[in-house]
Image (cartoon, rainbow, N blue to C red):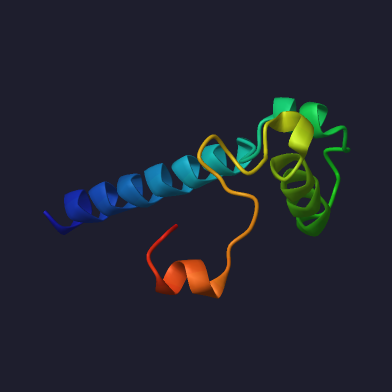
Amino acid sequence: MPIAALLRFMLVVCGVVVAAQAQADFPTVPKETYEALKIERSASPKELYEALLKRYMDPAQGVGKGKYGRAKFSATSAAHGSL
């Protein structure tokens, strides 16, 4: 009985190791993201973040004040409830 339990334990350990190896082989960021941002796949996480932020804040991508936005926000309009 102890041999069977040990073999079962070893099988579980090997399964976990194989699953961890398989997970490590899959990239977390799709290659299409790098292509759209026009950066290399070897870019650092900081470069990736900056490129994503630049694209996210780009007016050409649709960033703006929005459909219901107003030109300016003042403290007096907020105090009077006229947002």
